[in-house]
Length: 100
Image (cartoon, rainbow, N blue to C red):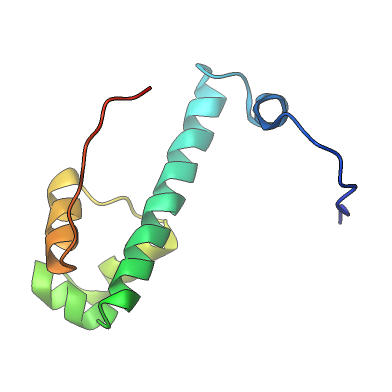
């Protein structure tokens, strides 16, 4: 177990050391897993804010509860079409902006 030593870190360097430089296959795999987890947490929080159960959300998009559970755990990444069905079922919108 590591204890916070309160030192300021360059987290780009930390990520590079732990998961490889940007552009490597190791870093790409880490980035994909991180984005899947981040997306899963957004969807989980949105479902809870909408006061829907996994079963209710699943019915709204024509899926089953276990599929919603896997998405929320980050173990399954929905297709773009399914992602948009979930977003719509939760009353959300998606905004695409240029990368900086």
